[in-house]
Length: 295
Ligand SMILES: Nc1ncnc2c1ncn2[C@@H]1O[C@H](COP(=O)(O)OP(=O)(O)OP(=O)(O)O)[C@@H](O)[C@H]1O
Ligand SMILES: [Mg+2]
Image 1 (cartoon, protein in one colour):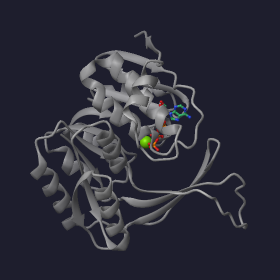
Image 2: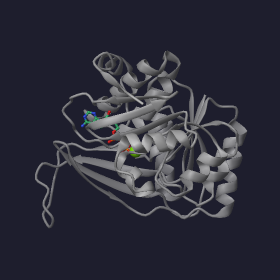
Image 3: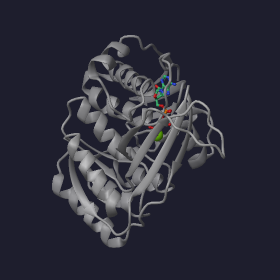
């Protein structure tokens, strides 16, 4: 079983808008709404891939109730941790590969919320992997969760990443290239992947949207050119890739990298967020080519 934690989930509305102009009115004829947040996105993708997964969610207010309702309707198992305040609302406007996001403010987690989240995760153990992705919510939450001994997948951009890597059993660390720059001032994905690997990540993965992604594991570094797809929007592609990697790890490194890349591309090619069609992902995975880098 997998566990994901989402400290700052949201109700996200996604609109295709071809003529975005500040100060004008837009009336798209289609719209999608999802309960999102990186941990929850990974949970959705794992669920679609047939994995047993529990999404631990910090929820509050009316939007919190909507998040719970939406997650239940999708059949994703969850553990709800009530918090004070109102969960975020978000809007994403997209057109032909360009996107604009507005993510509103979420609740501030208190010490007691951290305790409740940690207790919920602990009560669900053992697990194959604990996914800590997206907004940290509280400076001590991820560090606390990292000490539980369960294999971790870390995908967030906060200075506590180093501490989590120091105290935790890290199966995967997966920042994107921009996050790598923000965290370490490193621009080169290969250098970044090496650094994360040296810090103890058994898999270090640095993605860069439609640019080459680096996967390092077991002393082998692979560069993968993302598949050519017509991008709808990229929201959740990293989450889909992470879910695909976790799902496919038992197949061995080469196949896991291919499947993960396929999941990322599949997500980028559709308007939904981290919703995967497994057969489509399998078909795409057969097209992925990776290059082993020397050294
Ligand atoms: N336009 C695209 N075409 C093909 N594949 C894509 C595209 N965008 C993303 N992907 C795939 O998804 C992977 C992850 O994308 P990206 O680097 O955008 O993740 P991210 O920034 O972590 O996204 P998020 O945090 O929103 O989930 C890429 O390495 C690539 O394989
Ligand atoms: Mg990401």
